[in-house]
Length: 385
Ligand SMILES: Cc1ncc(COP(=O)(O)O)c(C=O)c1O
Image (tube, rainbow, N blue to C red; front, side, top):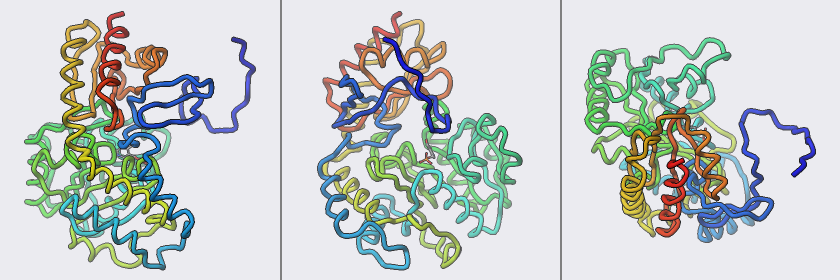
């Protein structure tokens, strides 16, 4: 098919696929030509309830006619209710609403530094925390820092899952240890519970904070509402975004009550943070995630899918390891993952890579067992070649 060269007016910050999104429903995405794809990426761990969840839409629709924006000079009952839900889900006390994952992490970094009066933050090699200067500095990947000048000072990148290195590095100058309970962008690398427990203990021992970045892992995906629960720790700060509004742009920093002394009036802010439409999306999403017991759903489907993959593809020469909790699954390959992503697309399945060699599967938690079986069969065919 002859394609006419069309000049884009967008910065090429993304390597886009030859695929134009038209609409989506549940676990099915349809392109401009009407071709349907089974969604195994959920907009990068965003639409945990599937596309176009009718209950979330109803919630947002109601707010659409009641006012889009007032500003944080007003009190909003829905913002309060939504914050209360998040504190109940985490056992934490207070919420700051932002608009994205990187913003939630910026709030966490600022809060930790201001509360402790210290600047050193230990994060981890291969981590990903976002693209703004603070979150980018926390991200332990050189490629993401390159070309942007001197990073924000006092970030230290330690090897992930290595308790000894952590023990040596954390001291009375540490403001916070910041970690993903499963490194997502870095290659779907699950944190060892003993490692996460050590981080929590060291933070406590040295008067530092434990910041857990649940932007990708949160809201049911890994088989619990938040992945840190599986290590049995109590973070001081949890950040969340992505699935929080089931696709509506929103983020949140949830923290212990004592942090209030550092985060009083003027300490931080956002024009749009806690916006009424976003709050409607979050309230609708959280209520639905709880009512369908999304974590249990992810745990059961994750077990089913992982077992199927173990059975069908684990012994193939291209496959090195299958790993990850719930419906956050990485298939590490012995070679580049990119061609397999495209081969799966040709078969009608959408997925993404993590790191250079890992296929990342993050389907909506509502995906059917039938779709998971079809996805496993397609992966088998593609990886056999
Ligand atoms: C763990 C983690 N933190 C933060 C972010 C940044 O979130 P956002 O793209 O919404 O700024 C991401 C995005 O992939 C992420 O995976």
